[in-house]
Amino acid sequence: MNDQPRIAPRNVDAANNTYALLIRNNILAWLQQQSYFANFKTFRTTRKMPAKVADLPYLGVYIVNEAGGPDGDINHWAPHCTVNVRIGFSVWIANNDEVATENQLDGAFRAIMRAILEYPVIYNNANSRVEGFASYTRSHYYGNTQLDNESSVAEMRAELVCRYREYYGYVAVDDFKTMNFKTAWPSPSESDGVQQIEAIWDLPQ
Amino acid sequence: MALNFSTLVYLPTFDLYARPITVNPVGSQPGQPPYSIRTDDPGSPSRGIYNTIASDVIGEDGMIFTDHRTELDVRDVEYSVVPDQFDIITIGPDGELPDLGDWEVKASHHDAEGCTTLTLMRVVP
Image 1 (tube, helix red, strand yellow):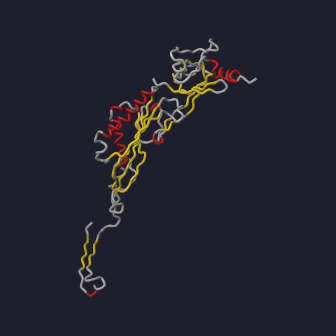
Image 2 (cartoon, helix red, strand yellow; image 1 turned 30 degrees about the vertical axis):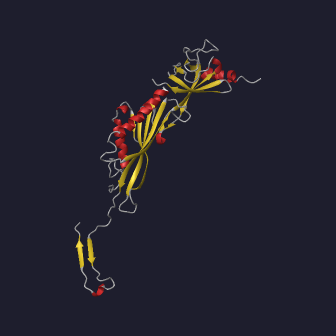
Image 3 (cartoon, rainbow over the protein chains, first blue to last red; image 1 turned 45 degrees about the horizontal axis):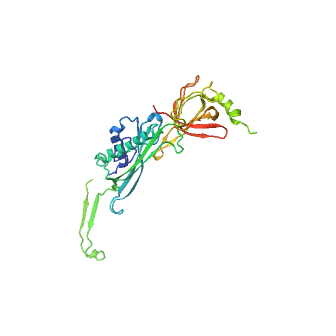
């Protein structure tokens, strides 16, 4: 599948990028269409830039990590991998009411999970099919560890493990131009005294 | 005789740096109306020393939310009941200093010299 040179293009496609990135992009695009996130100000795919109060409400969908293993025997044919990509979700809101805050965070998690698991958009996507969802985690946070930050922010963190397969095809580095076939009857050590049959195929390129 | 640190040190410091506040004692005195005068000197406004510094919050997978830690120091002797958690404190304009709006007290810590540090959380409209 991914047999093209990887030269870091600006566009995203399966030849030059992993399915993990495509899955992440598909998830974010689908969540942006959900009514729960209609009033969200900021959507991000990486953690490169810090978020700030003016960005709230905020939804980040990140590639946290991925782990792959063999799909079948590791020494048969080209490498086939079963991959688990961990997609992270970060929802930030600001609210002084702690009960309303928890309700909002829980609602965000519910909206994310229902959108992904109840519609065949992510797991049946044509450009990056997800075979299944191996596990997930969810937790709520209310500021820094000392709880002394001034903003009344709260974060819902969730991680969803999506499973897909990645097939790597061998790339031929020498051309198959000619095949030379010669018999050795009755055995290689006795074949010198016997007229053998030899055939040569030239394969058009 | 021990020094009265609050009078000898905090009082002149507060006279120089403190700014007027209004306290709605939702947490420290439930049911009582907001006040903005000192208990020990009814002719003077309630006051505190405002301070804020950067304090980032770490989020999902190490992301950063830029924030601040904001505090207000108050002299205990200037209040009949020192402001506490859930109180709403309004820090209005003071001369050329801007209006800082409403804050909810998240936590309070007192020292041995008669000062309480209120950790503030901005009230979202």
